[in-house]
Image 1 (cartoon, rainbow, N blue to C red):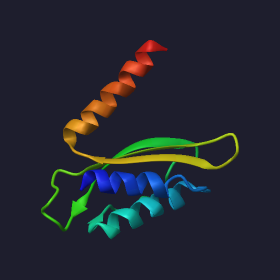
Image 2: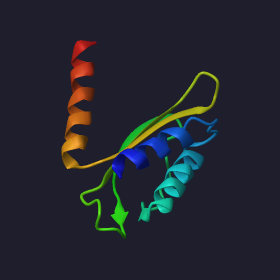
Image 3: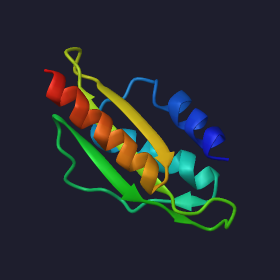
Length: 105
């Protein structure tokens, strides 16, 4: 089920996104379609951010859900968003990859 959700997130986040809030709204709509919810996010950084959010799940099919979101403002003044539904181990893997990339620079 996570693969299906992640595919939907990928598809919906490749539209033009004009604000961090509209990107998060797209994510919330996709998750709602699958019976999941994330809290509303306010005061999002207009330059970009990396966020990990616990996901509430009405289904018991997939548990231990964490949502990884990264977004940034492009030179074209639109936002690139990436979101992935994963578990705690997946978050650890993503974060360790980020640290490895920073070490290489």
